[in-house]
Structures are given as structure tokens and as C-alpha cells.
Length: 388
Ligand SMILES: Cc1cc2nc3c(=O)[nH]c(=O)nc-3n(C[C@H](O)[C@H](O)[C@H](O)COP(=O)(O)OP(=O)(O)OC[C@H]3O[C@@H](n4cnc5c(N)ncnc54)[C@H](O)[C@@H]3O)c2cc1C
Image (cartoon, rainbow, N blue to C red; front, top):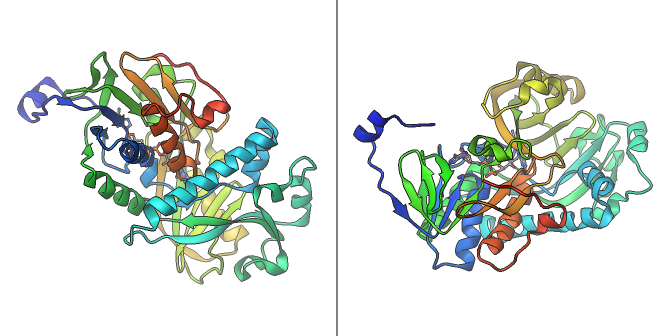
């Protein structure tokens, strides 16, 4: 957003600022990076700049799966990167969840979270056989097979079995962000909302209203990277995702995080009788490109159909919404130092896994910023050259 000469002169008086580090983007990633930098270097002054309000992006719009990911995700990773790399990623995700628990959930009584497991669901034996692959053993990644008889009662008639992974969490993402915010404010980190960053200069960063002088910049812009600079256009692409919340006539007896990969949906209960579901993006793939929040009627109907036809549920829709994710071609995030007039780092492109990988990735970014390491974990997978 821009501000006119007239508004700037008459309405806003935002003085120029001076700080050590500016973090652009007030989502889960931006806040987490600030958390870890201030953990390592409490002496540094940090400003977080958010063009809207904290959590306005995907971080306040997601399904609240604090998860390592589905068995299908690790199978795909193994195929693409090899087993060792996929196992490293699994451990990284595991550590991420552990750190969130230790640093935020455990010490924040205001967050209602639930420890649970994830289930990668298989509708019938044939689908499971087709999915199985001699070169991928889900057991190596902590997945255990749950037969029909051991499935939660609510899923017994519908699914043949599932690959289960434990030590996952269900969270309310807005509560998670509020708690992080409180911790950051206690550390005197300045959070500036309703201010867009525009251009990186030799002194720091220009916003629509002022200049912030700083030594280092971290960009945590998720699906909005290409808006910030064209250099990101082919690297991080904005895609929308749709969510639906329904009230069930009769409760379903399963408290896990569910992935139905062939149907391309993920769903969970948020409380008794309230179920959240997302996915089905292939029903309107081209219509979902972009970072403007809007509903896709095709996908919303697809999600309702799934609940009615596949899960045999009766329900009333209580809310519909959308959010924007930044996707990379290999679905792994970019965590890099980039070439820019002021020392700048990029963290983004989590492609639907930001809540799971985010906290540990932000620690990695903080280690880069504070000079504790020169290469991020994800640079073992790829290094991207970006000039801003
Ligand atoms: C519908 C949906 C469901 C999802 N479900 C899950 C899930 O269950 N589990 C999971 O792990 N992941 C999930 N994800 C993905 C996850 O939400 C994201 O990976 C994660 O929130 C990314 O965090 P972020 O801070 O990078 O992005 P964001 O939260 O999008 O933050 C980026 C921020 O940058 C701000 N910004 C943009 N441009 C500027 C600028 N020029 N100046 C200042 N600020 C700017 C934006 O306003 C925004 O607040 C889901 C995503 C969606 C959309």
C-alpha cells in the first residue's frame, strides 16, 4: 500500500527510526526469528515491521496443525532428495515441535494446545498397496501402521487403516502468535503494525512513511515476497488455500490430525463437534494463484462434499476463509543470505509446512544473523542466488 503526499503530511507523523535489525513480516516466522535473535543477542535492538496486523497472513489463517507432516510428504521427500536428507528433515521437524513446546507452549497457560498424533489415512487395502514402495519404509520415519480394528471408532467404517506418527500438537495459531508477541514485548522488541516496507537502501529500509536505519534486515514475507521484489517472482509463488469450519450434528470420535492424501484434504477437530478442513486445491488450481484473500466456491463445495460423501457427516457450515502460502518448486523453504545494499537475509517459501518447520528454521536464521554459522540447514538442500 502507498500513502499519498497529502495523507503523509496531514495524518501521519512517523519519525525515522534507528535499530540494529529490522524483521519485515509479522507472521509466525518473523516473530520466531525475533525470538531467537533476542535469545542469542539480548543487546541487539530489533524492530518487526508488519504491513497489516500480526497474524494477518497465513500464520493467523492456517489449520493449526503443529506437525512434522504426513507419511506421503516423507515418501515424496525421500524420492526427491534421498533417504538421508529426508531423515534429516524429519529430525529437524521433530526438533522444531520440541522447541515450540519447551519455549512457548509449556510456559503459556493462555494457549490451549493438545498433544496428539497424525494419521495418514488409507481408504482401502488397494490404495495402501499402490502407495507402498520397496524403497521407502515409513517405520524409519516414526510411522506405525494402525489396522482397521485399532482405528479410532469414528474412522473404523470409513478407513482401512492409517500410518500414525505421535508427538504432534493441535494449536490455535492466533494464541500462539499472541504469546510470542507478549514474550517479544517483554524483551523490548518494537512491533510496528500497519507499515509496509518498500525498498532496501544502503542505510537500511524505506517504508511508505519513514526510513529505518539498521545494520541487518530479515525478510519473512511468505507469499508476499514477489510483491516486495521481482527477484522472488520465480522462486516463491503465492498460492491461496481454502479452509472450512463446520459444526457436526454428531461428534466424530477421532482427535488426531488427519491427512487423506489421495483426496488431497487435511482435517481435524478443534473442539467437540467442531471440525476444520482444508485442501482440495486441485479443484481450482489456476484460480488459487495469487495473494489476494478470497473464497473459491469450487473448492469450498469440494470440501463440503468430502465431509458429506466420504466421512458421512451431517453438519452446518460455521465459517469459511482463505489464506496465502508461499510455494517453492521443491516445497522446501529458502533460508539464505542475499545480495542487497544492507546485509539482508531471506526466510520463506514454507509451502504449507511453516507451522511445523518454522520455529527451528527461525533459530537457524537467527544463527546466520548473529554470525554463529554461515550456512543454513536448508542450504544443505539448495542455495539460491538472489540480488535485490
Ligand atoms: C489455509 C492455510 C492452512 C495452513 N495450514 C497449516 C498447518 O496446519 N500447519 C502448517 O505447518 N502450516 C500450515 N499452513 C502454512 C503456514 O500457515 C505458513 O507456512 C506460515 O504461517 C508462514 O508464516 P510466515 O510468517 O512466513 O507468513 P505470514 O503469516 O504470511 O507472514 C508474512 C507477513 O508479512 C507481511 N508483509 C507482507 N509484505 C509486507 C511488507 N512489504 N512490509 C511489511 N510486512 C509485509 C504480511 O502482512 C504477513 O503478515 C497453512 C497455510 C494456509 C494459508
